[in-house]
Image (cartoon, rainbow, N blue to C red; front, top):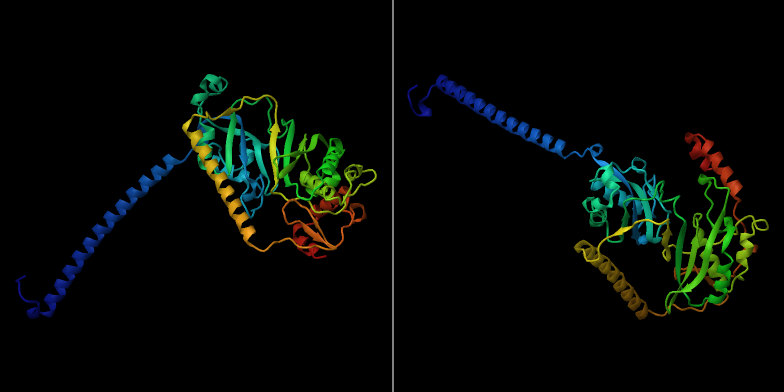
Length: 422
C-alpha cells in the first residue's frame, strides 16, 4: 500500500489498516500472556518443590525419651497445664510445646503424640523453680548411641535451642538424657516442695508455727481443697512430710511445705487458715479440728490465699543424671544475663511502685469495728464482724459434688442450656 497521509485515505483503506493493527496487537498480547503464564508456572513449580523440600518428615528421625527441668514466673500465665478450651492468658506448657514444635523436636502440639507427662500442675499466677516434664523428642543419635554418654556432646542441644525460643520468664535449666527405666514425671516424683511467701506485719508467727505443725503426717484434707466433680475423687488423704514457718529475711516469712502429693488449691487453702490463726481470729488447734473429718466432714466457707506468693520450689525424684549448661559456655552466660535483666526489671518496677505509694496519702485507715482478713495479696477482705469458721455455712460434701457432676454428664447436650436456667 502506498504511504500517504491518513487524512487522504479512503474509508476502505482505513478499515483494512485498523484490522491489521488489531491483529498485531492481539498476537503481541498473546505472546506476552503466554510468557507471563509460563513464568508463573515455573515460579509455582519452584515454590512447590521448595515447600515440598521444606516439609519436615518427623518419622525419618530417631527419637529418645528425656526429662526436662525448668523454672517459670507464673503471673503472666494461665497456669501450667495445657487447657482444652482457650484461656485468657497462655499456659506455660502451651508455650513450651509450641516452641518444641517450632524447632521440630516433637511431631505435633498434641501431648499424646509424644508421651508427655508433668510433675505437678500449678494454678494461674503460681510460679515454679524446679518443675519437671518427661516426653519423647527428636534425636541426632541412633538408639545405641543414645545409651552411651560419650555421644552426648553430639546430641541436639535441647536446653540452648529451647531457651532461644522461650520467653524470658520461662527457662529450661537441665535435661536428663537417660531417665530411669519406667520414669514418669508425675508418678516417679517422690515429693513436692512448696513455699508460700508472706509479710510478717501484724501476724502472730508463733501461733502460725504451732498451727502449721498440725499439718504434718497423713490427714484427710477435704476441708483444705476445692472439690472437683469431674475428677470423682473419693480419697482425700495426703501425707505432709514437713510443715513449718520459716524466716526468709527481715521482712518476709514463708509457709514451707513438703508433701507426697496435693489436692486442687490445697496449699492456698492451708495458708488461708494459717493467716486466720496468725491474726488471732482462730486458734492453732483449728487445723486439727478441720482434719478431723469424722467430726467435721464438710468444709466451712472461707476465702483461699492469693496465688502470686506461691512457689512450687522443688520436685524430688530418684537419683538422675541432670545435665546443666556449662557455666563458662557462651550461651549459658547469655541466658544468665537474660534472667539478670528480667530480675532487674522487676526490681525497678518494685522500687517505682514503692515511690508511688510513698507520695500518695497514707492508705492506713481506722477500721473500727471491722476486720481485714489477710489473704496474702496485701489487700485482703474487709468484713464487718468476723465469724468463726465453725459457725459458718459449709460447702456441699464431696459425695454430693460427685453425684451432681455425674447427673449433669447424663443430661443431653441440647438440653443443657434449659437446665442451667432452672
